[in-house]
Length: 293
Length: 213
Image 1 (cartoon, each protein chain N blue to C red):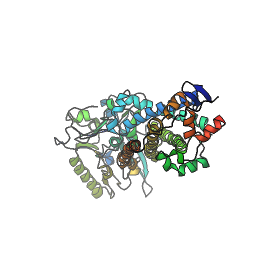
Image 2 (image 1 turned 120 degrees about the vertical axis):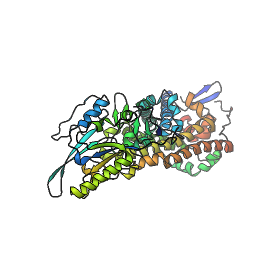
Image 3 (image 1 turned 90 degrees about the horizontal axis):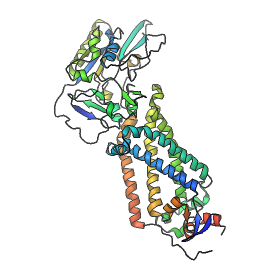
Image 4 (image 1 turned 30 degrees about the vertical axis):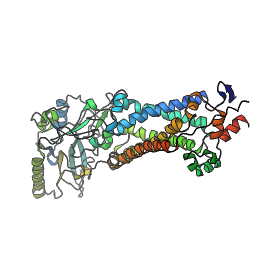
């Protein structure tokens, strides 16, 4: 989804500086998802399909409320229903709207070899540009949240765009628009953090959720999608939300020190054989014409 | 027979037509996966993928051609397994490798059809190719690896690039030696023939074995 009005901050598979980077200040935007007021109505899922013109896909019945196990290339917004048992044995629904987290330090973008297939806008939105996507799926490996999904027919990868097309026109994302309980909020990152923190305070003081907290993991530089959780100490209970997500170490090594070691080794090898030739020359065998038998 | 008279004097058949064919099949497929792989390795070489028909096309063919490369190497293994075993003769040659590097070949112990360097190159390409195939299969279908086993994906990324760099190092030396350093070597893998003098100088034990002298 290209959005010409949004300035670009990071480009995948790009060497050298990013044109126009930091020439203009833009507010970082963020989505705040309050899991404590989500009722699991899936209006956000439907709004996402509607706005992005995606067909409804087949569901899987597994005797729970979960309509499909995870997001798909044409299903970017999925509520994860988790039947949670509290320590006192009582039951609790943990419902979490799953989708791209729009990391400040995106692992998908770090892993992507295709120039311009993944961009991060100045406002923090991480967006896939399918025109430039080569279908290698390195982003699938780079993402710590299991979000990018591959379409085997078109050989392109898709995920939530944070409605970058709407945001560039001053609108809020479609899911926010559809939420009937007001558990979804959209605004600047600073405002959303403040709102999230005040909700966390409220939960602690009035609802007895002493472990309530705001999920904005620092391992990926913070995220453009934040959660208010009843229990910040156990994010895994919300359908596998990682406690401390990071860009995989192997991606970091591969794109960092190993690449430079590899470059050195390859260039060193070429220089080495050239120097060998200059110093020692070829192995020439004198043809003994006497050998006529 | 392996020895025959040609316009320039006696010639010995070093590589049969099937051997040359499989060598060049492996060489061409390796070059393709090398160039497309380098395009995905660094943005500075991404233009290689554009030259080779566009990045999505390169990405589509890279694993298939890689598979073809590995099959070619397996065929080589079948053809050359007896010739590629490392023997005590090779180990003695290996201890004197300094002389080989300095072109003091007369000081080297005689070797059979392949010397230790050639054998190492073959085994590096075979095992490197196997590692590339295994890690490449993971990179080809990452979504088939369950999320709980994603450590396999992370390992595959490192393994693929490490094995690739290993084969690239071997490949640089192989191409240099086959074209510039060992004169007569390149013609032998094109037309299959070498002169008796060449055979005696580089592979005396093989020369004696095939000619019976």
